Image (tube, rainbow, N blue to C red; front, side, top):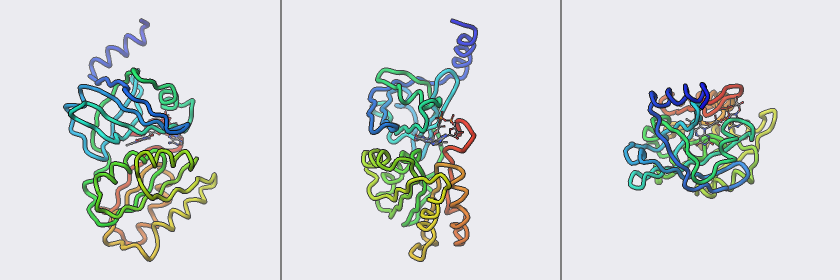
Length: 240
Ligand SMILES: Cc1cc2nc3c(=O)[nH]c(=O)nc-3n(C[C@H](O)[C@H](O)[C@H](O)COP(=O)(O)OP(=O)(O)OC[C@H]3O[C@@H](n4cnc5c(N)ncnc54)[C@H](O)[C@@H]3O)c2cc1C
């Protein structure tokens, strides 16, 4: 063992991460995997829909959203997307196989779905948001939820959406000049929306959220009715 590995081993012991093992890796399309993980630690955690979990190895972590967590069996599912085969997470995901072990900490609070109690929810996100969208749909079966997603490859995204049974969603292909965001803004700003009785949840790419938020605020929606959670940002690594 080299000095670097030795130091990492000591730090890992001190920080007390838990270990989980991949027990099912379902390839949904080129860049989406539904992965089931097992850990005795999952039998002891209190998971809420909208929580996040940090996963990694050698002290490098990336953040994900459990799609489900079963305390009885100690199993958890995550829908993972990779945008780049050569990024850290891209490398992990494309080579992942049953039996591989990763460290984790969490799950812990991220998006407080329980605070969204209006009869209508307008949700924006991208490929990284399908997991939390699934949490929302399962947690709020009576709510009228409208999903809007910007995606790079609609056919591939559809495979993941169908697997998670998100139902009818608006999938908008990304344009390099971001002109597609106009279609999404139109979905969030029109006469049919009952702004006083709606929650708005904006997730995914930080720069897209920044474009969509002002038109919603212009409709006098109180800040407490809007939840914003960026899952990645141009030029930044490993947002949590
Ligand atoms: C609370 C939270 C929950 C999340 N839940 C999920 C989830 O359930 N499933 C999931 O797949 N992802 C999820 N993500 C997003 C995931 O953590 C990031 O996509 C991850 O950081 C990518 O790691 P990377 O090593 O590939 O790229 P990084 O090293 O983190 O980033 C390098 C560069 O790649 C670009 N980049 C990063 N992510 C994307 C992207 N998605 N599309 C295009 N370009 C990108 C940026 O320009 C960035 O500067 C979540 C993030 C957060 C904060």
